[in-house]
Length: 238
Image (cartoon, rainbow, N blue to C red; front, side, top):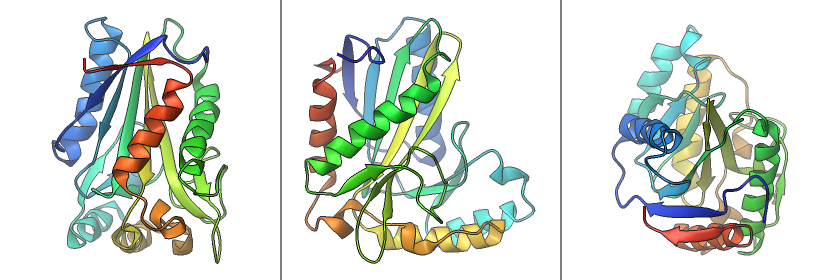
């Protein structure tokens, strides 16, 4: 059992998206509930509505208003998240995993969590036939040292982006796994990043199914839970 994980985690499958802003806010609400001891350590899994989640730094760029318009033109709702770096896009072909856990010294393992969860999601994807690895790839959107990528032709594809929100006494680690239908994500990112004036390589935006045809969100969810179960006890429901 990993020292980074609670001995048990309640698994909450959110049946329907609450909407772009509401889904982000719900994660923060659950973080407050877990911190206060009103809810146990938990996993929240859901498929979001089409969303471009901008980072705080994006909102201070001159092109932010145009980037919001570009997002809407592609049918993606713009939202601003409190955790994470640059803009990321997702839709119902993705799986979002929010891991929320109390911890007295919540900042102590902040960087270690990125490495641990990067390996966990890499293992889950490898179990489904994706040649996955951990690390920033040149030109990726919302770049991060612990992105999970898949090796393919002509080059690596970013498949999982992670972000973390740490408060006194608890933390929220949120991961977006792109499983299916990468074209709309690539399209909206091209226009939003252009508006923001941020350079990136659109060839790095992909989905797991681009590397393992036929893979589904349900299969990835099951693989993620299997990977978790090796290190902690999973309990259904809250």
